[in-house]
Image 1 (tube, each protein chain N blue to C red):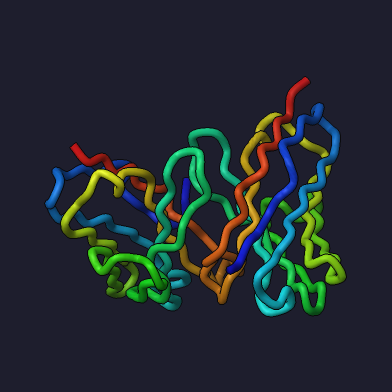
Image 2 (image 1 turned 90 degrees about the vertical axis):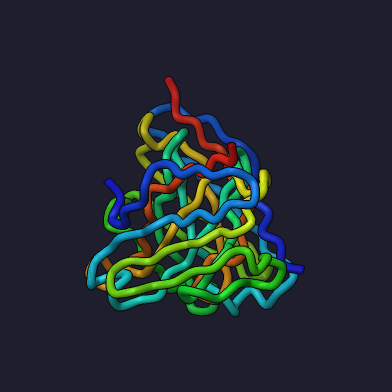
Amino acid sequence: QVHLVQSGAEVRKPGASVKVSCKASGYTFSAYFIHWVRQAPGQGLEWMGWINPDSAGTKYAENFQGRVTMTRDTSISTAYMEMRGLRSDDTAVYYCASGAGNFGYWGQGTLVTVSS
Amino acid sequence: QSVLTQPPSASGTPGQRVTISCSGSSSNIGSNSVNWYHQVPGTAPKLLIYSNNQRPSGVPDRFSGSKSGTSASLAISGLQSEDEGDYYCAAWDGSLVGWVFGGGTKLTVV
């Protein structure tokens, strides 16, 4: 059974950075891209980008270019999403998602709160 | 402003059939398949339909998807109270080179 387990909630001040982890189990980690999707309070879903766990290649959405870095550690089947220069409007639940090109599996979400 | 356009809300009574639309363009729905997700507030989205009309294992056949041109639809028949929540469509956009979502449709079973 596939599971994506994310790290816990974070609180940061504006301008700070945050790194969220996503540990995969139940399948071959390199088989599927890991995507990151965020959801601001009361808002819809926004795709942030992906990482290919096999090659470490990445693709970021234009809105996040230069501010987000996605990495992975294949030895522990874990993907990471780091965001820098946090602003108040980055307050959101951040999800990792995986599957055969259809986001079939989702993590439980990580709430990141940006507040002074 | 979402790239894919969905109605903000929909409603129906138990047992009724409802449809939710998703409108896009030639660079997304017009040239790529559509997925649908159901999200109960406070929980992660769940894949409902992939590749326009395919149901993952465990999704009841009350849920069906279709696509025509640059639009897609999700139909739910035999509406049940547990169908309440938010529904999102998604597709790959070749011009933006990324995944795009609809703004979501809040379904209420009255």
